[in-house]
Amino acid sequence: MAVYTQIDNPELFFQCKIYTGNGGSQSITFDGSENMQADMVWIKERDAAHSSSVIDSVRGVRKTLTSDEVASEITESNGLSAFDSDGLTFDGAGGNHVNDSSQATVAWCWKESATAGFGIETWTGDGNTNRDVAHNMSATPNVAIIKRRDSANSWIVYHHANTSAPLTDYLYLDTTDATSDASGAWIGVDGTNVELVQVFSATNTNTATYVGYFFAEKQGFSKFGSYEGNNNANGSFVYTGFSVAWVCVKNIDTGSTKWVIQDTKRSSSGGGNPADKRLKPNDATAEETDSAIDLLSNGFKIRSTGSYTSDADTFIYMAFAEAPFVNSKGVPCNAR
Image 1 (cartoon, rainbow, N blue to C red):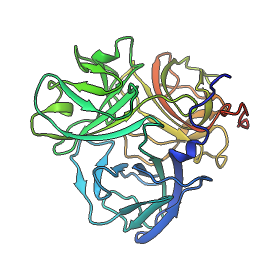
Image 2 (cartoon, helix red, strand yellow):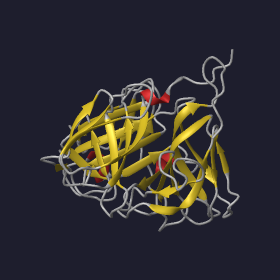
Image 3 (tube, rainbow, N blue to C red):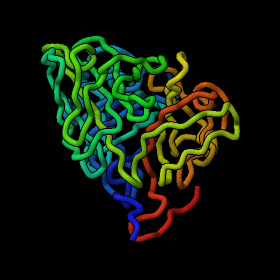
């Protein structure tokens, strides 16, 4: 029997939650049919120009990094206070606006799991040319996102589809830059370790502290690839093998192009297609209506022109599932 998916219910490992902040104490419950205790949350206020916050269970709920800035880690006195068994608890607005009063907010939430191909690691740099960082996933990462915590440094991104020689290329999450090339940017990526190099202060400077988020592709749950844009509203179709819940796209050829995130919870139609409410990891601006993408039962299709998602360039993407296209019993998911 064909293997259609390794994960029948993606809600056990990824959920997107929209909520309204109250500036004080509140607990929010995820919408999925299954409980999920998150280990990483990426939170963005949707209707105001505030930085997005990245928080994880390894560093602790009071430790915040902002994806659109080079800033070092911040310790908050209030804001997110707990990763609950099926949601999040807040005890204030937080300095990075994770729970501002009356503000529409979105939280993208992942559970750390080798089954789902997601690992969180922290380390102290040793300054050596080669440095192995174990990711504990028993699978080769397709994506690595690394941030220095104790100093102002860009977020450096490895993506296995970033050009034909991804070990010599990197992107910055906090900028609009195209792919940069550096010989030996990544020494190696395998099923046990990510090998880092000292040349990037973003990954292994002596005594510096870091956090890395590592993702390995899992059939029916996650997909990390590339596509060619055509600068047409009848844009490229990308097959993922699952109903897409969340997708992040970046033009790797042309500079001054934003990262774009779309999801099934936010759209002008109230969750249907097209998914036309974009947020930008490298930009603090509020949610915009543009860069429409259809999130489909087996992939996604670009429905707009322009450099963010559809120029005649190469784009890399990261996508996570709402449901597998066909589950392990051979039952197809509903069309979107």
